[in-house]
Amino acid sequence: MLTSLDVILLIALALVFARLLGFIFDRCKQPAVIGEIVAGILLGGIGVFFLSNELVTVFDIHIPALNFTSPEFHLFAEIGILFLLFISGLETSFSQLKKTEKSSTYVAIGGVLVPLFLGFLVGFLAGFSISESIVIGLILVATSVGVTVRSLLDINALDSDVGSTILGSAVIDDVIGIILLAIVLGIDSPVSIVIKIGLFFFIFLYIGLKIIGKVLDLGEKIHLPKAFLSIALAIFLIYSFFAYTTGIAGIIGAFVAGLLIGHNLKTRKIVDDIQAIGYGFFVPLFFVWVGARLWEGDFSNLSAFNTLLLLSLILIGIGIIGKILGCGIGAKLAGMTNKESLQIGIGMIPRMELALIIASTAATNQNLVANPILGHQMLTATIILTIVTAILTPILIKAAFKHN
Image (cartoon, rainbow, N blue to C red; front, side, top):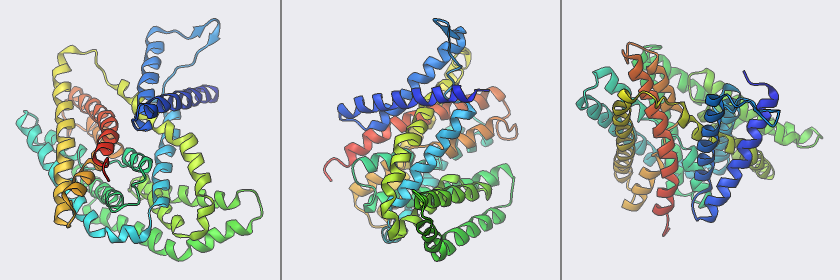
């Protein structure tokens, strides 16, 4: 277990490397987020080197375990992804989101069905069992928009029809992914899950619209420095907490909180403060953690390397093709142009939180994956999927929006 001083050093190193690599990639005309992920890969490799060689002192100075995937560091990373979705909610207008409601639904359905089917089919044809093939399909279902949001913000396209459609679709396919996972694991009935999700959105979205202004007014009446900001952050964290405890991803709660708070005109004065906290501290830690997770895989077992390579190629190939095809078809059916459909499909490529949750759950559930070694390989392949899609998506988004 890391001490508080160890965590302070990890955070300091992560911020310095993230900013340095982000600056280098920005100067090379590439999204800074790629540099932050590469920083995580480098720092993760350094940490593995120190741990494997037991180099704990340098010139009589104690060097702690540089574990950038430790639970202590992961906590800050989780707050980072919550901040990213909170900020995206602040930047998204209700009118724009309602305008793209139809296209978001079509895109989400297409983006779930096509990757799920292709993942199952290719997995089954590759020789995996039915349950293992279902797991492969499920891993590919849910989009993680953290990378996409950051990339769209960098090119000022988040509040466009395409950006709003991507955000709305990602919320919907996350919810669908959670329901499908619950059904496969048998941890709760589909009806129960749907009721919980329905109650969450009714209570925290509908009722929130009625009272959020009054709660924020309290922040203005408290004559203390940044009291209004403190109240807004408290609402954001409470929404994330209740979304998580009701069985919904915490990022959905953060996004909903951002929508509600952003709907209040008084919040314009604190948006810069929130972005400073998020982008200046927490968000880079999330992307460093993503990069460092690459080193969690076990690459020493050469006999199992072919299986790992096959799984990685399946997940990456079907993960990219499935989203572009499925979301693109959904966007076209909703009446969007070919270019917009391609942009949406590319924006829906990244996988992260839910994919890792499904893979890690399956790895320890012998009813889904009977062989523990295969379960670990699935988890490693999923980590590789998250890294590859996180690095590729900003590059593809920049190319797709080049002539907008």
